[in-house]
Image 1 (cartoon, rainbow, N blue to C red):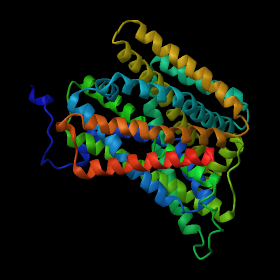
Image 2 (tube, rainbow, N blue to C red; image 1 turned 90 degrees about the vertical axis):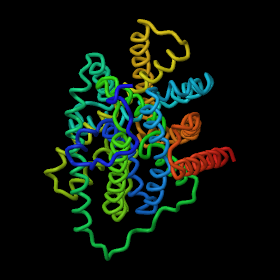
Image 3 (cartoon, one colour; image 1 turned 60 degrees about the horizontal axis):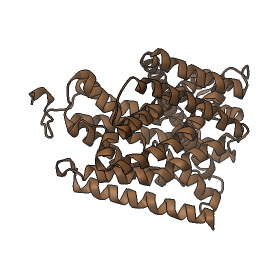
Length: 424
């Protein structure tokens, strides 16, 4: 094997800033996809509803989900295969199970992220477009961008705006803490152990930091990067990339929660179920901290971030489903391209229809998408553990394996208990 393609598991090379900028890739794409509904919406809602009560839960779910994303990177780097190919190698039924889970979650997830984008668009344009028109424009624009192949060019621009949003969140949090009268006590917290509160906690964890089937996306991104560069990076570099993106998403989740807690929770204000009003309240958080001058910039940055998430989902889901179907049929051909576009068109159309049923209640649509993601997580988690254990050379540290077992147990037990609570 060419030495350039060999994987170095141990290296004494120092990680310089220049080296870090070179190796960052799929991990930053991961952060870009994650900082959407889970952070802008769910983390801020958590702070507004419960103050800081759910901060430990955010930290816990980020910790427990991490091993499954590292397994994805380890498997792809060390075998050259993506997770879908790995699932098929376990058993055809394993891939069929993931395929079924993905079909269910894809429609609801795309509906949720596109509807958030549409409401932000309508708010940014001061109501010049109705919710329906903004939603149709969002889905048509993202589909057209993907069709024309201009996603990468736009994605670079959007990532710049995401950096702007990140900077704004940090500054707003600092301003909020310096301006808030910490001597004043927070209002009475919402009770935690009611069915509605438990449902919200499940919803919060579903997309925190991103749905667990996103581990398949990071696998596909890494495989594509290796193919494009014709170079297999060191394991250390791949893990640094992943961890930088993962830690960034965790810190942003904490900052969004703090904004909701310090501004809305202290004032006893809750987010409106109406999408346009919800968007206005979200942008107002920054206006109250940084000044009204910032609201236009933040609304554009928030819209760009959600638009990026919509683009990612609208591309990743049909791409994943197409690859699943190719593997299941064990036959390639020209029909693959047509299948991708057929799936993309159907996903966009059905997602639009689903969103119309939640036109007056954005929060319910988001909760439905995030709860679905949480209930699907044990299946994906189990498959990733099974896959990483399929080859002794792939097995990571004992600590990471034990953490994955704890994570899988937590996701499974909480899912079963929640389903039983709904039935009872």
